[in-house]
Length: 186
Image 1 (tube, rainbow, N blue to C red):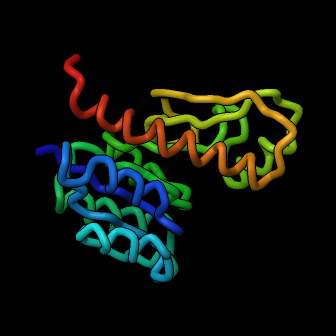
Image 2 (tube, rainbow, N blue to C red; image 1 turned 135 degrees about the vertical axis):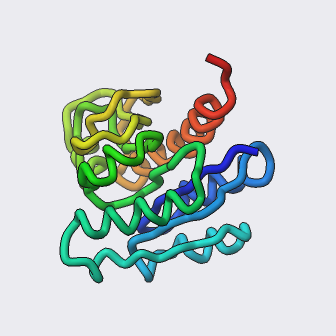
C-alpha cells in the first residue's frame, strides 16, 4: 500500500478530508507532522489513528535547522508522497532539494496571490474567478510546477462564503490529485 506524510500547521481540515476519503482505503497516512504544538489538526489526525509528530519550529535557531529536522522525520517513513495541507512555513532549499516528492495546495489560482493571506487578497481583487492550485513544492514559495487547478465564478458573496467555496474546492481536488499521482500509470 502507498504511504504519504501530511504536513500541517493549524485546524487540519484538509488532513481530515484526505484521511476520511483515502486513509486505510487506497493509501496509508503513515505520519502527520506539525510545526505547531497547539494545532487543532493534532486531534483530528489522532481520531483516524494517524501518528502525529510535533516539530516545534520555535525551538530551532534557523529555518534550515528546522527543515533538517523535518526532512529527517519524513525520511523515517519513506513516503511515496509528501502532502502539505495548510503547512504555514516557508521551506528552505534544505527541504526542497531533499524532498522532491512533495505537493502543496494553495487557495488561489497561482501564479496570483502567492504566500500568506491568499484568500483575502483574492477576495478583494477584481478577478471574476477564484480557485485553488495544487503544485509541486520547489525552493521558491508557491512557484513549483502546477499539477491541477479548479475555479469558480465569483458572485456577490461575503468573505465567509468566498472562503467556504475555496475550502470546498480544496476538499474536492486534493484527494483526486493525490490518487492520480500515486496510482495513475504513466
